[in-house]
Length: 263
Length: 253
Image 1 (cartoon, rainbow over the protein chains, first blue to last red):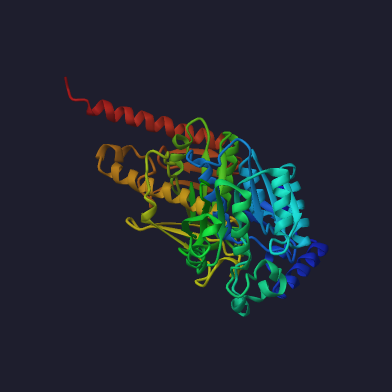
Image 2 (cartoon, rainbow over the protein chains, first blue to last red; image 1 turned 90 degrees about the horizontal axis):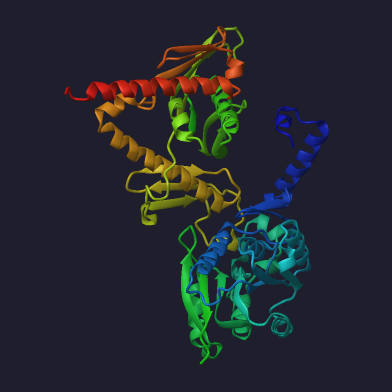
């Protein structure tokens, strides 16, 4: 759009289109679905219902990972690194990381075919698709298939990243109409304790990560304590809880775990 | 650079928008980058307040610092039905951008405020208010940004503005200590001094510090040669005055 066009009056056709968009918003459709795009960090991504819309907190999760990579003590740091994203949705996390780490490769999975399609589209638009494998897999039912694929095709991973569904089942009724009526519940519902997918990720992790490989999770503020408690009764996993990091509202939001060094 | 509409309601805001456009063009003319950090428009296409980060080669601050102060416009406003001439004002503030080394801000001194819900946040909430407000607790200096859709980008921009304001405050404190330097600050010493008048009926621009008048307001507002020449004149005058002062202050041998 040329800059002069800002001063031209809106045409009848444009007015009609704008009104159609307003009607959608009046029906509580999230604005990101109305305009079919939204920004995530330095990227603009396509948005399409019912694929989960990235939240602002998740932008900080990417920063967390990038900070790790800038520390020379991180054992997983090497010229070409590979990571797994569980529950990629629109592809925001993976694509943002691939964009910021030009030497990295991603395997991104989601149980929703809509999410896979959208992630693929966004990866292509942002020109990182050659370094991403985006697969429709459900970690709750397809863990073995995923494990096989990863070990056969990629070897061990440097890190796992996820913003898994973490809303508590009982909290669903408190969610806004924008979320309940338009976003995929499968992207939100973490089961009765919100930990269903989190636990599945942590169970898979020791089998797919390199020694000292890390896991970066975004979770509900209740979860950091719950995860640490749960880990204490899962010694066979060989995972260490490293840190809880707060989001910009001061809530415990991000968990960093690590696969212990195998003796 | 921060611009703010002064006295004159809608007309002042319209003038502020024209001035901001002029400086944006001037930046392009000088091959500087012009990144808008804040932009608060008014209903009629005017501008209440805006901030931009201007960088480039060839002494950006040294050129622009003379634009700091109150600019006055005298004309018949678009909103005026009876053809009367109004006088309105807008203020330009020029703050030098601190280099990372000059100013260290302790993150513990910052309170970062967002409009995010007080509940669980995260997946529970999908609102689009990504505005970020940062308060520097020890000094009370505040900056805000709601330009971007990305919260993190807003935070980065707000931090940039905060750093510039803190640096400027620090600089002003240092400057005020020195009497001689105060005299040399042409137009940057206070917000109440009117540094330039744009008189549309007479098609003239008069800078009151150097008492220089040029014509062709339309050409001037393009932010190209005419503005550049004006700034040059002021620079030369200031250098001359500074030299005079230096010479006057040399103790007699």
